[in-house]
Image (cartoon, each protein chain N blue to C red):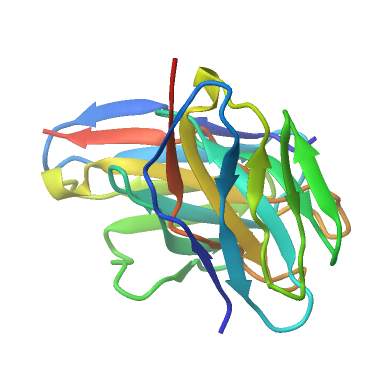
Length: 117
Length: 112
């Protein structure tokens, strides 16, 4: 089956610093990956769609300059939270679209708990 | 447009009780339907799926049947365990290359 690895699982950073989160597809090539944010006891909020070799597509209300997404290869997408503030503290989850014709659904990373102090 | 509606919960049951979590959808065409489970502090795991009408997805004792006539994909389990405590998300993909659309999630608590 398809496996997506997300790192780090937890990170604590100081306000004003930047944090990078990685999302890797381990046994398949993912031309499209997605980044979600989840608030406590809430559903998933799609932040952006990451397309290999092109610019990410951001959902309405998501700041492009704060949440930088890079999808430089078919197996890696990164989300960088720039100049982080306490309100950016959240659970971030990535997902990869399965290869065309595959039988499995979207595969998710294990999430990253970001705490900005 | 495309959407998923599921009971919000929380749902609290005793161990070995019967579980139903309702899910209905709105979509054009023939979407694929999914149930994902999220255990505390983790990402989402695919629990089961169905890609066409009358298909039944099943896994770990959970089942859901794709009912096109009622646009539903209710999740059921005959006898729940404490370890089933988690958040369950119903989801659909309208067409193969579309984005996945989630319901709001249902938190399930199983008491020993």
